[in-house]
Length: 196
Image 1 (tube, helix red, strand yellow):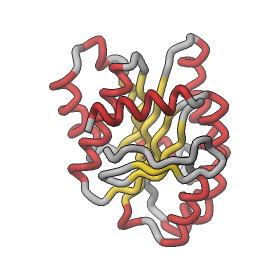
Image 2 (image 1 turned 120 degrees about the vertical axis):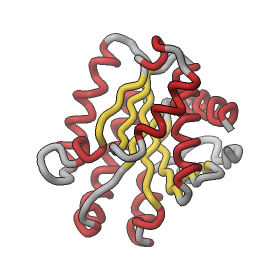
Image 3 (image 1 turned 45 degrees about the vertical axis):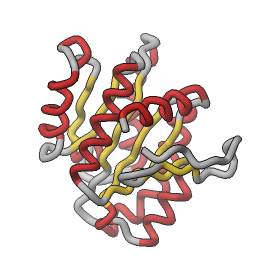
């Protein structure tokens, strides 16, 4: 699985990055995919920004510590996802995008290649459903602007059909625990990526 993620992310970086909606069902698969994505990034010389919660990050970190040396572990930068998405007390698109840009710009100014993994979680379903479309459209613009590869992970059990359709319209790729599909018709060529 790790080799497939490595190859796919190389392709995405060569095509000005990629914005991936990951709708996961299985926590073990989620952790394995997160670790594989991070390892692929480090192996390609990237720093990886991981926006994750306090419950899952220790599991991810333990797996990474078994695979990476201390120098490589310093290429992983963790941000608490609740702090990130509710930086000023609520899920506000402008605030989150501004915070994201301020966080990645120092890397880009030093020509340090980065990729991101963001576990998007929220307290209030209605609040997220209202803001997510605007937010994800801005993330897509930012990803293209900076040439980043980023995965936005959502727990499938918390995603309504309306929210799923919004997320599908705001991302270029759709990932499940087992596969990644290109969903953006404006990308050339339009093709399904290999299953993970």
